[in-house]
Image (cartoon, rainbow, N blue to C red; front, side):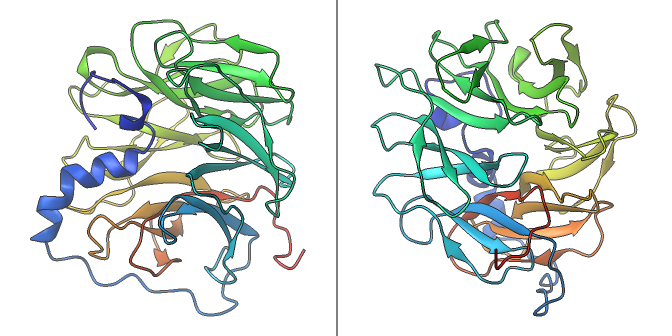
Length: 323
């Protein structure tokens, strides 16, 4: 996804879609790598993973065990419910929905009940999306067009106390909190390219972490210990997942697959694994959910259907899937 023309947030909201649209012609003529192995029953039970899927015709949020078993649908609306993000205690999920006509931020319990709207705007151009829960559970950062440009805001859980954190002429998106809650990492688009930035949680002390020519870096997420950052980039000509130190140094390509998309990143609670979306098995524009070790090894496929599964989010606590 390259370029600075952003007439609305739908061009930015799903990086996976943008990557896949760019790659679809190449993918159709490419030979995929050997099929990624599936998990065997009971092989991995480190909590659960929420994700959004289009298997029912529109975007809905689902929950599965972290080995791909026991898939449960959490939302069921005639409009899209997407981009799930867990509360720090693993008991609630914030997400982006069009239930009210425009894009707004909602919160629900982990079983899909008790849905409540967090943001509310009066015109459709004031779209709110890409929520991210603070580590202390008291705030949610999100992206909004309420001031005519995509900027990062933060709100308390009442939705009434909203503060703007970024203010520039570029698109700022995909906020993600550091584990200690002191900083927020995000991507921004100056000079026709996407780069990763970090700022204090109050919006001060902005620092640029990547600077890679005309390529795109984004979708950044801190490791649970705060020492590393996983992110997506097309810096090598493909859309791969990379790992770097929190300082922006020591960048390594984890997926390194020519002509296939990998992105939509999240970490396991113990930092040993990364869950992501990809079309690496030759599924065209229908991405599936995968998990790999944090060093890029031992890739396993979690979902197996012909529709789009994307934006996985690992439940913070390794809870028993039956609870």
